[in-house]
Amino acid sequence: QVQLVESGGGLVQAGGSLRLSCVASGRTFSRNAMGWFRRAPGKERELVAVINYSGVNSYYADSVKGRFTISRDYARNTVYLQMNTLKPEDTAVYYCAANQLYIPGGTEQGYNYWGQGTQVTVSS
Image (cartoon, rainbow, N blue to C red; front, side, top):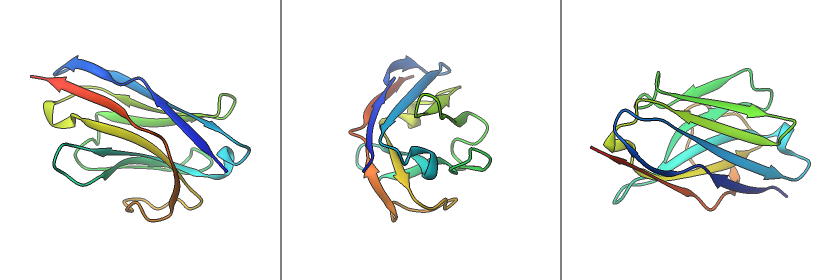
């Protein structure tokens, strides 16, 4: 079993940056693909970025490509989401999740473990 705990959210002005962290417990972290999702008010949860188990492959939603970077640190059992040039439309609750498979552009299907979420608010 994997437990995930996110941190790093907060309030930032448009154009600013934040780095989200997700610490995973359990021995299977290195064997899981890790994704970041977000849910904006009134919208469905959507995939933002995902990284495969080895860290070699990653996928980004078009809306964040070039601004967000996903990475993972095996020594710290942590996956990060570096968010730059933030926009008001990035405002959402951000969740990390673990999947046994790496599915670029996938949905929530297959993500069996979820964190509690961290709020990101971008003011204009």
